[in-house]
Length: 122
Length: 242
Image 1 (cartoon, rainbow over the protein chains, first blue to last red):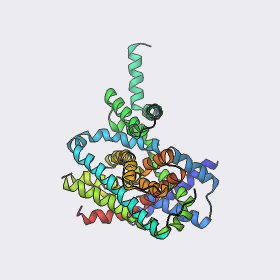
Image 2: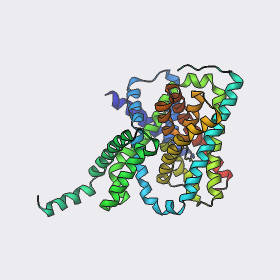
Image 3: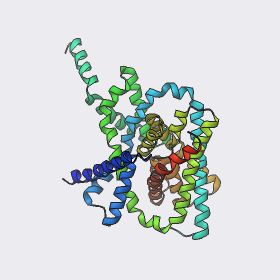
Image 4: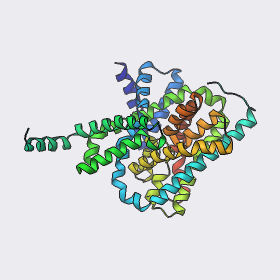
């Protein structure tokens, strides 16, 4: 029963998110709003129900499997990919490198300023 | 069984969702094994290998994507509730966030702005189609959120899904190298940067190669940046006139 309750909570939040996203034509995907709704709900409740944790962590554990069906959809874009292969490769490598560089440097400067050489707990 | 019987069986199987659902699960199991044999290298990430195996299978059997998706959609559907479930690790890490609120807030905004502006900017300078640019924009965000964003923007969700996965692979390769070059040694900073730039791939990498603290921060970055990106990406893309 606990898995059913957990799944109902997740689907209920997603449903609410989809309704809000569509009703107000927001650019934010319904499941993301659902995630926000669940987060607010958990903050108010002050703990994660066991049924929700079992279902949610089960889904997150196999998250990578869930990407596969959409990834196979690349088969439909062979034309576009071969046409723009260099654009895609250069953009992915440069943009990802710059993002890691900027994020780590920003955090390092800020962390150094606030807590000099402080170790964080595990 | 004679030849005709087999052919009838194939006609039935290739049209029913059963075959492609099963094929997806088997491909994932095989890909996980292959990755383990290869020493867990991000170049042969199970997701990438599983996708390659399935694309090969579809090409060999002459199956089109809608037929495949009719079976695989049952797994794909679970991305929605899985996205909602990202609220659980975010909630678990609320104390960390509260303690490091400002560094995290500023670092997240700087990182997201860099990820989106650099992806859109570079792709536009190199002359990519609008659809390609919009599909690239959410590339650093975890797939379920990225696909939702691409769909809302007018990109191609399935192309975005592929680009997101490739971004994850690139991040796992260049990340450690950048940290070494710029002398970033703090595991919390390494983890947060990897999770922000390379979503779940970065998180998995951190848990496996850096440690539990880096992994936890990486997971936090993935959830938080996914959430924030969904809100700030549409206005940023509008600035580029797309």
